[in-house]
Image 1 (cartoon, rainbow, N blue to C red):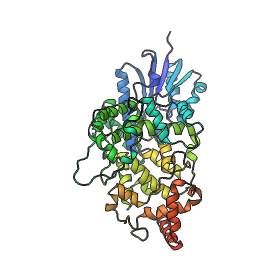
Image 2 (tube, one colour):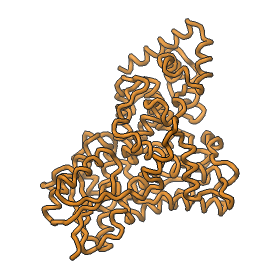
Image 3 (tube, rainbow, N blue to C red):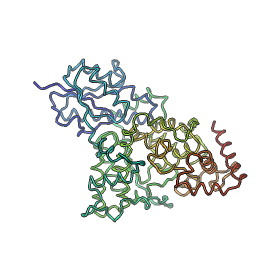
Image 4 (tube, rainbow, N blue to C red):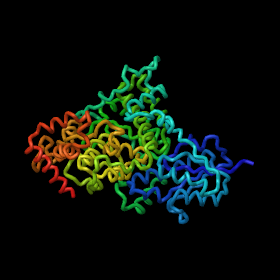
Amino acid sequence: MTDKVLIPVLGDQLSHGLSSLKDADLQSSIILMMEVSDETHYVKHHKAKIAFILSAMRHHAEALRERGWNLDYVTLDDPDNRGSFSGEVTRAIERHKPNTIRVTEPGEWRVREMMDNWQDQFGLPVTICPDDRFLATHQEFDDWAEGKKQLRMEFFYREMRRKTGLLLDDNGQPEGGKWNYDAENRKPAPGGDLMMPQPIRFQPDAITREVLDMVATRFADHPGSLDHFHFAVTQEEAMRQQRNFLDHALPQFGNYQDAMLTHEPFLWHSLLSPYINIGLLDPVQLCHEVEQRYHQGKVPLNAAEGFIRQIIGWREYVRGIYWREGPDYVTRNHLNASRDLPSFYYTGDTDMQCLSQAIGQTLDHAYAHHIQRLMITGNFAMLAGVDPEQVHRWYLEVYADAYEWVELPNTLGMSQYADGGLLTSKPYAASGNYIHKMSDYCQHCRYDVKTKTGEKACPFNALYWDFLARNEEILKGNNRLAMPYRNWARKDDVEKQTLRDQAQRFLQRLE
């Protein structure tokens, strides 16, 4: 007699090829999908993020049923819902009397620690399958990292290129002779009437409308808006968005991936990360599609390489960092930053146009692209000395693609330098000049980006020098900051004090 197997499938595991489903018997397996309040409340997730995940889960459940699976689906408003994964597995065991539990490993430490207790808690054999939707196993990443003082993504990325063969010539060398074309991917967006590609905006169906109504009522105090909900919620819709990006936006993605424009939240970006991270799209298959467009002459090399690097390089790398560093990574605070996150991060109500734009579109769409996250919201928080754990919590709350495994290293390490340089060779600190170069935000701002002091001065300018000054003992030995510190040393004492006073007056107004 075949053992009855209970297979819990989590909300970011919406892949038909999930490892726990491979070789599972349709007749003797029960898939358990659970909407639980623990997952909606451990931080106050953006309303649209909650709606996206729940709608995608419900649509995926329908697709699994159509494929013949026995499915047990627990909705958030089920009166008997116990509100946690363990509580709902307990109820499912009572209903189905399985002989064993089989599950794909979760993406986050807090859930993994919960699963590790299941065998003792339930008195049943529990198999936790590796998540093979990623290229690098935990052991492979650990083996690569072993003995290295600094874990630079560039060298790990090359290993992933070799492993996949992506953008390698017949001799195993990188296409075009270079591994990385990032230097060609930093152009500001062009002006004029150039038509920009537009993502597909999917109309909510009956399932999604029901979810939206529930979220609007149940999560009214959570940040963000549902008015602009446009997400794909099925694999078919996610594939349509993928094709739209490949056809219309990818050719210019490389040139303008760092650019920012007022009232243009999407530009040439893919908007595919929510679908990759939730499981609706296969990241490696997507990268092969991008490579094929390059070989067909439809996409320049800097666009193809830049996009592939984000997927098999950076995405895989931050996952490796997350699992290697452990659950206490979140507590690191190398720069001893302690200021509270400003309230305008939840309203967008600030005279700083760059922050107003990046935060405003985040609240509207649960989306901002990587430069807005790194060099606008992240840069400001670091310059202002905001507690990195509060910054981490905000990023985890407001972005539809944010799960702790991918968000935490990006925020704590890349954006806030709170891990002391494990991910990056220097803090990503910048004055207003960088924002002026890469965007048109400064043209529409009440502050003057070229002014350092006075009422009209761009706050980023004095904050930048104040950041260097207050962290000099920690950062002065960093070779990549040698030039900024030489420039600071050349200023006389009066100018230094004037800049620091300007920064302190602004920070006091924040409080």
